Length: 82
Image 1 (cartoon, rainbow, N blue to C red):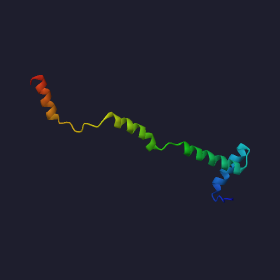
Image 2 (image 1 turned 45 degrees about the vertical axis):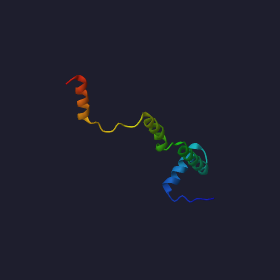
Image 3 (image 1 turned 90 degrees about the vertical axis):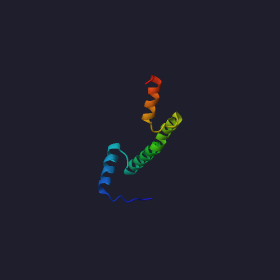
Image 4 (image 1 turned 30 degrees about the horizontal axis):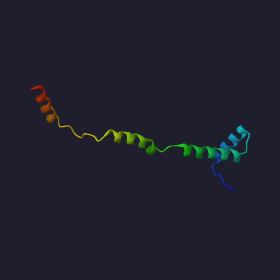
């Protein structure tokens, strides 16, 4: 299957890379595409990375919610005899 690359800058970069590596343009293009696919496959989505952290946080327990500072002060005063 033949593809026409219309972007001349891309074609020139492919030629430069092919010359540096002493390979054909097709080989260089194949290698670059394979590396890009492997890199994408190795990438773990952020939601999966956060999944483990989220599970740990949930295991810690439910949040206590808002604190009633007046009730806390009254309880503290009672404990201290004030």
